[in-house]
Image (cartoon, rainbow, N blue to C red; front, side, top):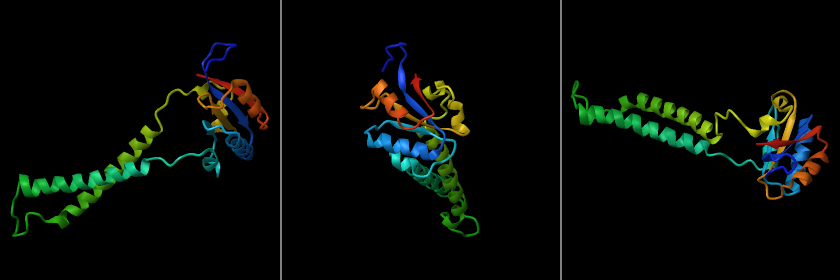
Length: 182
């Protein structure tokens, strides 16, 4: 959406609140009004906010499970290949496939691959690193990491109308309402 006054591309409208309770009330009102594309920015976790705005569970747990299974199979398979297929060597009459000796390495590769998949999966799903976001254009947004709470209704929302959304957020008791330009 483009602002007719300035010809700038509008990302959304952002409201600034002083307390977490004000943000919770405003988020609840926005959801009740039918807005779906809502994003919040807070300096600390706010209990109940994710449930109000409808944050869905991520796929990180499944990614970690897949990474762990891959590490388990890879670690065990590598040892099996080395001791049974590639270089089968009978040492002291022990069996060539001595699986108890494989357990420590299998465990370590499971943990390593699960941890790496957790880190890289989280980074990918959060679209990080993100050197630029339209919210950075809002004056005072730097306080989102200090002591202020922000609620942004994105222009992609089906109910978004620049003047109506701005008026809606002003009625919620916000300190300031700003247009977010892309």
